[in-house]
Structures are given as C-alpha cells and as structure tokens.
Image 1 (spheres, one colour):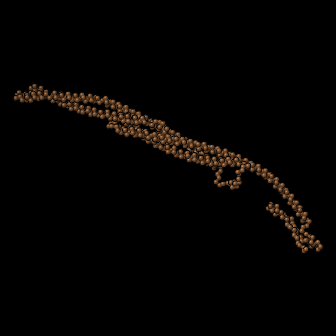
Image 2 (tube, one colour; image 1 turned 90 degrees about the vertical axis):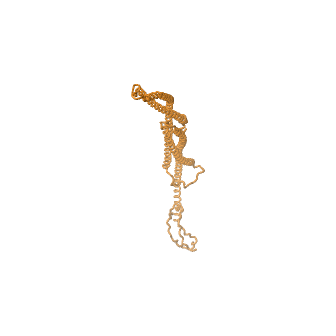
Length: 444
C-alpha cells in the first residue's frame, strides 16, 4: 500500500449557522506524516489525528454541549418570563379592549338615544306643522265667505235708487272689509308657504338624524358582537389586513362633531318650528279678531243706516199727508179765488156800463160830478181787486204745482227709502248672518 498524505477534517457546527455566525474552528496545523521507519507496519497506520487533536475535539464537544445547555436554560427562563408577561399583557389588553368596547357601546347608546329623542321631536313638530297648515288652508277657505258677503253687499247697494245711492259709512266700512279680507288672505298664503318650507327643512333634518341613527345602530350591533367575542368563541378568524389603519377612517373628535352638528341643526329647526307655531297661532288669532271686529263695525254701520232710513221714511210718511192736505186746501183756495174773480165780473161790468152811459151825456152835462168820481173809483178798485185776485190765483196755482212736485218727490223718496231699507235690512243684513264663526275663521 502506497503511503498517502492525510489532512485533518474541518469542524462544522450547524448551531453556529443557525445563530447567523460562523462556527469557531480550532487551529489545525497541516503537517505531513512522518515516513515510517519500517515497511512491515505500513498497512496498519491510519495517520488521521494525533492524541492532542482527539482530546481537543471531545473537550470542544463537551464545552459546546455545556454552552448549549446553558443557553437553552436561559432561553427557557426568558421564554417562561416572556409568555407569562405576554399572557398577562394579552389578557390585560383584551380586557381593556372589552372595557373600551363597553364604554363605546354606552357612548353610542347615549348618542343614539339623543338622536332618537330629536327624531321624535322633529316628527311631532312636523305633525304639528301639518295640522297648522291644514288650519291655515281651512282659514283661507273660510275667508272666501266673508269676501263673498262683502262684495255681494256692495253689489246690492249699487242698486239703490236716486239720492240714496250715496257713499256713506256703510260703504266705507264694506270697502275696508274687502281690503282687510284681501290682506288677511295674502298673509295666510305667506304664512302657509313658511309652514311648508319649515316642514321641508324639518324632514331634511329628520332624515339626516335617521341616517346618523341608522349608522350608529349598525355600529352598536357590530361593537356589541365584537364585545361578545372571547378566546373560546368558535367563529373568530384571522383578518391580518383589518389591523391596518384606513385612510378614510375619522377620529373621535370628528365623529363626535359630526353628530353634534346634526343635533345642532335639528335643534335650530326645532326652535324655528316653535317660533313659527307661535307665529301661526298669533296670525290666526289676529286675523280672526280683525275680521270679526270689522264685521261688527259693518253690522253697526248697517244698523245705524237702517235706523236713519226708517227715521227718514217715517218723517217722509208723516210729511206726505200734510202735503196732501195742503194740496186739497190749495185746490179749494184756487176754486175760491176763481169764484171771487167771477163774482167781480158783474160789478165791473155794471160800473163800466154806467161810466159808458154817462160818457154819452151831452154838452155841459158831461161833468165830473160826484157819481162820476165814485164810478171811476169803483172801476179802479175793481181792476185792482181783480189784479190782486189774478195774482193770488197765479201764486196759488204755482203753490199747488210746487205741492204736487213735493208730493211726487215725497212719494218717490218714500219708495226709494223703502227700496233702500229692503236692500240694507232684508238683503244685506240677512246675508251677513251667514258670516263665519270665530272657530271657522281660526281654521277649526
């Protein structure tokens, strides 16, 4: 067997590689084996290690085993401390998470209760506004009756006759009533528009609160389910990506501010609703009172006008018989004057005939003697008397004509007053009895 050069093997420690460090190797000296002195034992020589290498090798093994054992005990101690600490921390963190979930549930419940309270308040406010809207519409419809009554009264009074077609206090009050009713109707329409607008804003605020309440309801259920999870729950799973903070997630301040803003908006609408309800009630009360006050004023004016018409008609009716009596007396006076004139015709003829015959006296007999003077005076007296009687007859006939005109005027005026009284009392005042009541004008 030929001799070979043998080199010692390097020592490889897998534990050192696991620790990410090269294993320390003992220094090895490369020595060539010494040639044997004899050839008889050449086949039995290994020439691998020397005794010193052998001792060093197992001592190294023992030393490494001791180091590994010590390191293992250290790792075991650290592991025990670590899992005890981590177990406590894990249980503490889980308990803190459960506690915080409970606090979060309580906070969500409080906000959800507050949202529900304002939702119910907005719903009640909206229903109240809807009732007021219906009252306003009924009041607006009820105002048409007074308008129809007032315009009908004005139309009826246009049919008054002659001098009774006057712009009196009744007409002034009726015109004011028409203007008032138009103003009331315009006010009711504007108020109804405000109520409709407020109802719309209440519904929008209520919808916002309901959406927030719905989100909190879902969040409450999810957090409640999360709080019920335990280490023994069979339906838990690994969700590694759920621990990553999402960009769109809001913080607690913005979360609270969002709900507070919604509640603030809802409270503003509630305050606006309360103010509007008070306004509507006051508008309905004021318009009803104004219409009824004006109605009373018109009724009083009608009553006063009827009293005036009755008084005037009574005086005219009292005066008419007096005029008729005067007409009869004047007619008799005219007859007497005519008779007196007729009675003066014969004496005048006699006197004139006497004067005529005496004017035929001849010569010196035609003198102005006492009879002549008497006859001439008699004729002058009769002429003056007849002139006076004719003048008186003319005046009597003029007076009779005036009396006849007065009679006609009185009769016409009596008929006019009767017609006006019929319009005022039987038409207008009877129609005004159908004026709506206070409850009807208030929208009930």
